[in-house]
Image (cartoon, rainbow, N blue to C red):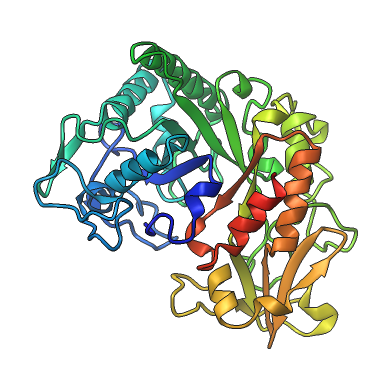
Length: 418
């Protein structure tokens, strides 16, 4: 976790999603542990039993890196990122912090916890106890009953994805579609009761949801809005180096293009793009069996601060919509090939040469056979304008760590949403 205010980020934020907590594979409850997840995408058990309670509440911060400017001490009840978030909220009283459960590696058991009324109640009650009452397990001298209370303002469900299509090994059934709605309903019921018992405070239940119409088809778009405060539509990762041989394409095209060489998503006639995703949630896509009906004012559009890329790309059309030989090589500070942060690209002197596609309102970089796709301030301005003109609730970013030290991208987001 970066020292807050090093870039002034908190002053431009309404909500921080802290990501992410796992699901206990045996008890099917909210969970804390200190075990690394496997980074092997071919490992169906990559996230089983994984967690990072050391980062959450065991790591101590010195005075130079803490929000308050005061060093952690050995006998305080809780340390780590949780305590830094607590200090951040004290500094910015209007800031909300929501705890994300799941994500790409930690979604394996969502189908199981959502499967029955009993399993849903057990799961939700365990999350409330652990992260609202603050009963995190004691470890390394930190934690214990009540020590993490008062930090989180609710939960974000990042189930990737109901009905399947996520990490290898994820559990999925046809009933996930209805059960996701029922899980959201159970959270709403429990959080309303919890808030009523704690001074009438409103606790949030939100969801990070896929932007592909094949993923949206596995959601009850016309029912979820009754229970969720908002959804963060992950309008990115539509294309990237995971499509190893190309064609190169935009990871988050705002609009469709007649030049897009990708295939339509069966059984519909639309390709992946941001506008199609938002339309699916609001107005619906009949050819995909998506009814729409989700309130536009409860939708946040996603903006990536990282880029995706290919290598071995010919210079034709400045690299756009061309073949490739594989994902772009990882930068020294990047964990995997095919991705790069805005900060890394800027440090390499590449962001100044970004190109613009007026049809999709998207930016890209082509340099020495490498093609990168992501959002410049110009692209961010277009997405901010889209969110405002379509009556959306706002935008969200993933994630702050990929911005440069000057907060260039977050500054562009904030400027466009004024």
